[in-house]
Image 1 (cartoon, one colour):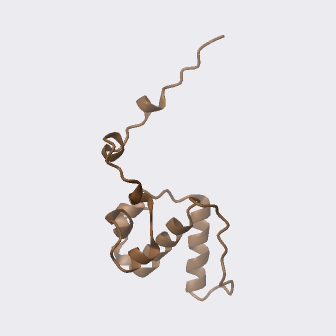
Image 2 (cartoon, helix red, strand yellow; image 1 turned 45 degrees about the horizontal axis):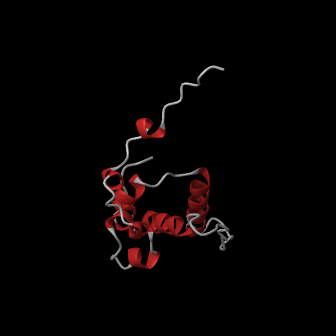
Length: 112
């Protein structure tokens, strides 16, 4: 049986400093849309450049954003969207994405 030339994950991935040192607090992951809207969230959620640097735009996220923006532009009558996700599935993250995209487009980072 031949050996498959797999590289162990810890050699293929460079971890962020906060993860490597153990300084990453689980509270960082407790996103709150209200805190973002009130401008009192942690920078990773409050600052669009930091938020989008850590947000991968999946196909479903891009489609939802497109649908919501079309609705906000008055070009679609479908006003209700149901996000059928479990705990940790990305509902709040999706809402924060939409908040940043529509609340202050000029502050968005130059990303595709």
